[in-house]
Image 1 (cartoon, rainbow, N blue to C red):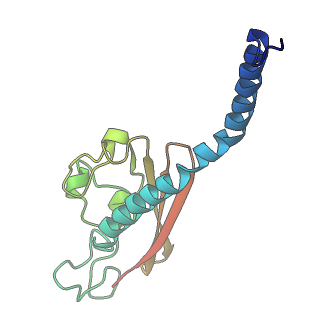
Image 2 (cartoon, rainbow, N blue to C red; image 1 turned 135 degrees about the vertical axis):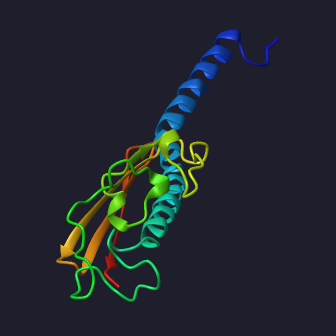
Length: 166
């Protein structure tokens, strides 16, 4: 009489072969799993960078700029000269930033990332960092605002805009 079916050894060999195939397939797909997160983080970085850029662009060009209608520009004959220093004035916190160059040198990561009202955005941007630099490009005419947002995977997304003296 002939026995039909698989022996225990054949079953074990089959399980081992299937485990090896599963491991190879999964290992080959791991880079795809990591890359699937990149677009999500890029969108989050774009949201953070654009939000911060909107906040900065809503500020006055300079500490000495006219804030009541912008009829006078700093550096003009009838207006005070533009301030020479970049960065916040002494004792000024982010809540007090009132001109573009106050944001120069701003660095924030995780819990330090906050909205315009000072509310922490750590839960939305965990692992993200922002760096802001502001440079005068033409004497009293425009400032270049550059924002670098670093994602949790260390990808740097850059934003830049000019703020004119108007």
